[in-house]
Length: 105
Image (cartoon, rainbow, N blue to C red; front, side, top):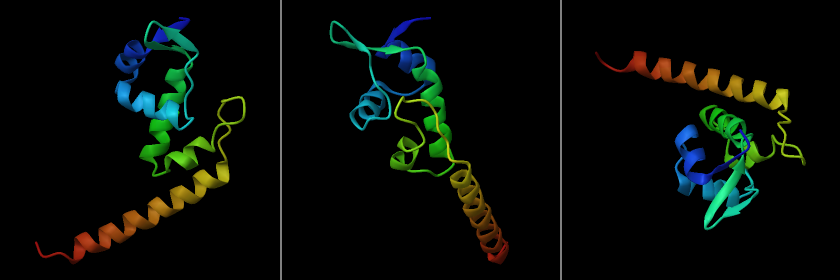
């Protein structure tokens, strides 16, 4: 697939260009150049954006997500951190069920 400009990345990933620019600003993704004024990205950015979205859905902060990528920008996901987050989510679900059951019908 090669390179994609920011518009194509946005269309394929569903991530708005403004968010892509922000992710680049904070170091989550990296453009590989420009064609005119449009940022160019390698195709592997789509996988990285999927992993970022997965991390956000799981409740990780962008800082925590950034730490899940090694120096070479490849995923380096700490399993123990994922298990701890899963335990936290499980506790939250139980708390929400108790709250739901305590509300009047």
